Image (cartoon, rainbow, N blue to C red; front, side, top):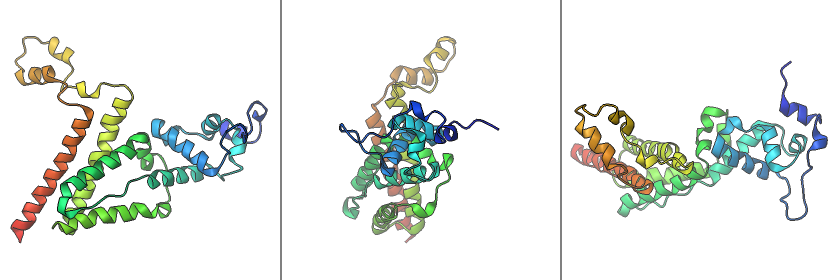
Length: 247
């Protein structure tokens, strides 16, 4: 039978070498939410798949058996961690009279939350989550954003396009730019091709590539995000112009 380190520890095989939950000297008392928040913190950096019960126990300074005094299984912790994540999602401040600013501010607020737990954004690829457990704010915030788009003149289909576009832009930016930047990678110095490739072919007539490589970096990470959100604003303007033309 394959060795299961989580279950081995849960049955007490090596529990004598592990500490019990500390409740004195300022140490937080072990709770279900503390376990779930620790899961979210670890998943935000490494992804949910990597966070085992043993890893959680090590981070909390307890035995795996101690965790099972508060939860039935790992899936319960994952579900609560996702709820804690969603509870931190910001509410939009929809203003149809200043919808461009509203869109950009909402995108920036989403980015700030996503950036705390970037790898946790991949939870739908890593885990099976009960959709019925979603926090009600997730629905209310989406409704408010769609309501603003409808109020400025977009149809139902167009409003959904913009909402989906917003999610994709922020989601992709956090994972492909912010996450790598926060890990110490000089993302904004990335060019269409590595400079060394051009150096290997000094006589090749590729003036546009050489110009692009020489110009990097063109902007900061925050400027790049503003540019990304400006692209969404342009999309909304185009959709509004098309809607007005049809009318």
